Image: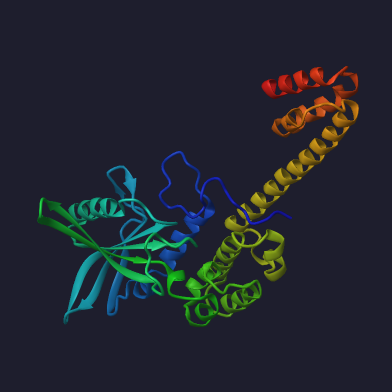
Length: 327
């Protein structure tokens, strides 16, 4: 089976531009966020006294970009109910000038809805964001716009990266069920914890469809650490085989396995042809033999068909160069 899946398009990205493929993870994460919005915002945003939480049209188009999620919330704050917009942005890792994007979103949302905006950036990848403080999972950030020494405006927002403040064994015991998949990204994660995560999610009392979605996220994250067959040994995937995310993972695993099988066969053929060429042309140089590593599998097969008919090492080299040029 293949090693951990590495897609050429980062499957955790949320800032996918038009025309670029999205994986099912993107939609599933937003769906689960919608399902558990009040509890999730209270946990991630430390919003005590949250009274109402209503989505503002899911993704909101702002200046030809889409926000990830926006809610109109009412929070009991300073002795009275205060209404504002809560904007949640997903990121897989550090984004240059994130404050510019948040500032643009904040002003445009204020113009559109007539309410102030609280921003939270949630890093959902396993790589530590640049400059992240030790033993911390939530930080308050600030950016100033200045003219000379004069501060003309200030933007404040929160950022969250759960692996920064938790290790997997502790998080599994303390976290709400809807956040359990993120334990897989944390330090201290061991394969036996996968089966424990499965038991805890299935015993959470959540709707079966939500359980399957959360388990799919567990498998998705686990495939970034382990091979798909290792994950399957710990989590029986049959119970949610129709989930689009696990179907995507399986297909990627099969595709990766085929690619690696072809690559393994290619390397074996290179070694075989190098040995045959060395035996047939004893004085052939190592540089010529190394050229075989640049040939495709089909070109190598063609070289193998022609090798016995080549009269000398010079002709062998010319044939290899021709195959490399035309492959």
